[in-house]
Image (cartoon, rainbow, N blue to C red; front, side):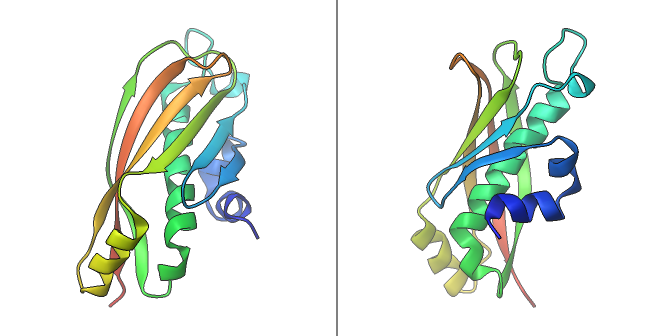
Length: 145
């Protein structure tokens, strides 16, 4: 099962929004939100909450891809998030997530008995390439007790 299939199967909001997991690697995750009138806002574009969920889902996809080998000893958890809406989003939008720290550095902290935190940066774009939003989610790997 791919990371996208796993998230679609286990995260109800990903299924509800019909998110499309285009690419999921430890270096990058790309997730698309199709244009769906049921999730539009008052101006006809994707609702801010749908865009937040899209970006957070892209961040979760890269975290699972980058740190999947650590799941037997730690649980990935989002710690905090900040989003900025830059331009009007219309039609389908795509979120592209990248890790803000090297995987080896984060794993080394986990190996040292720490609870590492690391940022994931996400750009949300329209099909014409314009950036409609930017989000940062700070994640942690909480060691299992």
